[in-house]
Image (cartoon, rainbow, N blue to C red):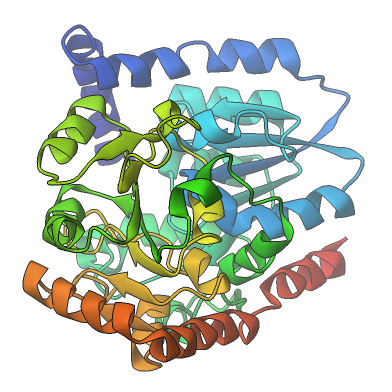
Length: 412
């Protein structure tokens, strides 16, 4: 299995080398990782004890944050190396309070994995949710590093549960010291494959979002932009989501609309603005002189979305109309927002839960969106009921962090 995987990695490296001359995203991917090993060599002392934490992106970082904070507190004599795979996570959190050193994860080649584990020599390693990198896991195993999966989520259709993934499943079994999973389905699935070193921890995002109302959520000029209107926030939207809501924006011009795209792309934002039949403004251009001239505010920076939910009366969470994956619906839930989402949500247990409890509504098309939105605009009592359902759902699922830390304390 590793041989086939490593042949594929060689091909990926060759493709990156060629395509970096023609594609800016691939060029950035290459440049971000070019000197990571050298950075580690120059920054790390062999006299220090290290813990390695790896996350894919911002969502996984936020999900693990309550646990990371407790790990940092529990192991005060260790330094933490925090790695990200994606630029969207690294760029927002490169100055975070968790990592003593924050890096991009080098490509999972045999040489990179061997060098990183040799330099860092982690006393413990933590991966979040889906991050399984064969060469890193193999070298952690060789290094006898206790390795933990946090917030694991497994489904029957994962490729490593197929016959052709048996080699990788064997590596997972032998390299992961303990699996902390989010739900019973994941625990039962692992058990059916003779993986018993597993604990049902729940979803640490509940612990994370529970702290959001206590942070400073003020954003300059947002309150003035909203005024006395009902505020609708559409967060982490993709093209498919924006297509869904555009007619409703044009029809309901008396709402204060705030759109926060998942990816900040000036050309895409301009295309979206051109489809509007009302005035819109970019957040970076918002000031006291133009604050009342627009009905739609488009966010052109990252890191503001959770704060925006504290202002909203209604929320739409993006990702569910396409195949990119539904984004975090727990963030608006803690602020007592009624939540609308797209049609593709079945892989997201929290979405299924909130829909079954009537705190969230799945939308299939533009017409349905307009109908549901208009009903909620006209019915404040219903909005309040949905908001309370969502808030109470968060409160009833707290305690994940304690479960993990209790286990780790028992291993000290």
